[in-house]
Length: 292
Ligand code: SD4
Image (cartoon, rainbow, N blue to C red; front, side):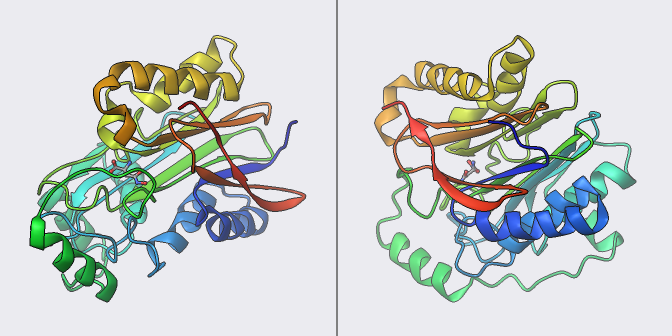
């Protein structure tokens, strides 16, 4: 099956995000704006506890955000460990378009946001995040758990009508992470990679396990060598399991890929990874196949 244009996003919240991205693509023809506006829907979704400032905080009770955006010509931008910014994906786009750099982190990213006129939000937990954080503090034990709220990053990849590609990825990262921890989502090649010559890939799940294998770059390179998107995602999961074998029962990670012909694939370590697809026939939610 091939679709062009085609948009894929991680998890159930990918549905409304894809709807928005599709609308922007149809109205403006701008693929980067489509993937930015699409995931901004999730950054504002108060029910999502893994994306945006409403997400679960780090151990100190502070929400810190990671995001990246990339075009198939190699342009990219990202922000990591940024505070008080409602739309880190838009800040990542500013890094891509307005600076000579690819990545800004922490206080420097926040200063750049102020300079660019982004409003600074109060550093307050959302009611739901506050409640869960207070519960967590009782034992303060950090253990990644498969497929619950702390795995809900949105990664979006899109193929435009002209065969060009773009992607975006945004997250509040793992719940109760150490202060300063950065995941895969803002790391170009880990959480997101896009190359117009080949295709695009994005990741969700335990960032450490994804960074270890340069997951999204790996998938694009496998597709370059002739694998289908599905085969490339499966190979990446096998590699991820091999490099993270000791704790694998507690790890979830999932990948999405599109090639420039409009074929797509999805695969996860464990059961439960859903993803949203949108093409000219409309949108639907699918269950990824999995290895364990
Ligand atoms: C991270 N990959 O920071 C992100 C978390 C995630 O769905 O995907 N949640 O490790």
